[in-house]
Image (cartoon, rainbow, N blue to C red; front, side, top):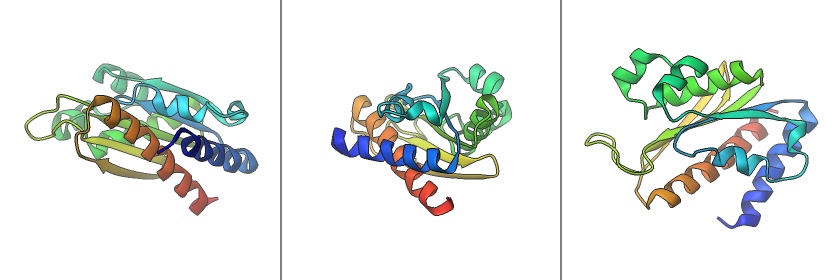
Length: 162
């Protein structure tokens, strides 16, 4: 995806959120703040974007985002369950209507969850959607693809609910 295409997606999110009077936050792990950076790369993002948290460590996901430690143990930190809890936690932490989250193995991975497996999630506390990305294209490409895909999915979601 080109830089201009990503900017168009970010601008689309901004336009919908601002016109509807809605707020957005982020909770990121493997994307390291890339989603936040893309959202705020367009003018006017401060009208709807409240903030974000990059929580690499499980202890931060648990403490600040309310992710269940038992779910991390049961499903792994790279799971649908954790990504969706991160959305709910970000909405609560930042007092927002919507949130976007990511958790994954940009490199490394485990025998059962290989490198390039990234869960993204978006929505409201009562309506969370998620998607698992797979395929290892290297750390930089994995995280860029996850951030861009999260924005595309979130824009599509906003168009369907607002």
